[in-house]
Image (cartoon, rainbow, N blue to C red; front, side, top):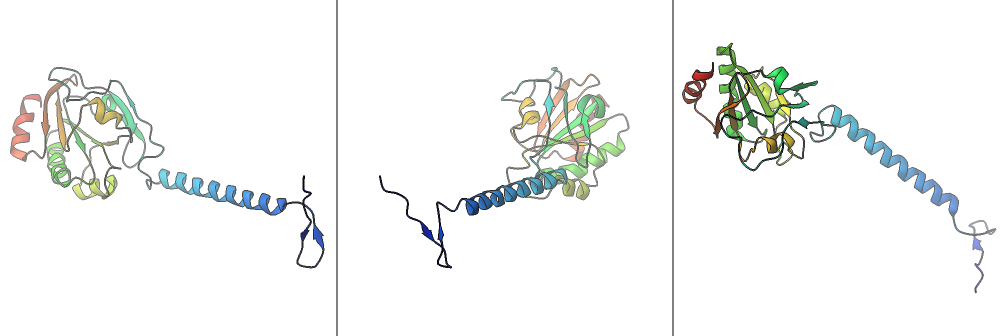
Length: 207
């Protein structure tokens, strides 16, 4: 077995063994960089920079492959709100209600939200809420920017990356609008941008 030869130093002296001190310093430096990056990511998430992080969603219902049938209750859920805080369907959107599922990058959604806001203002007996879904799927404006652009004053819940709320409601396209009665049972499900006169007509029986 060959013995390890001494390593010569630049000043002509000799050093024994591997450069453990330098390796330790390198590992410590790398660990500090990783910790700093994690801290920056966490701060960004808290400020809304990472839409998927630190988002806790609880849904009272299983995933489904199609919209909830008429007459069935809408699953309650608790989720973060655009702008901060947390809310739930039962507490923040009591029936009768209009619940809109939309994505920030969806142009038809951005066209529909101002219509929904006008209905919200014109119908004091109607609760209006929305759920932001699939925000991470494509680049686009932030949910806050879309809400400001629409002048929206109704609550907007943030779904999580696993799509917990969207899957519980069987959402397959945006926008999707759920019309709910006073007990938060499904009255009708509309998909795509709905013209304002048509939406007012469909909502009339429950308001």
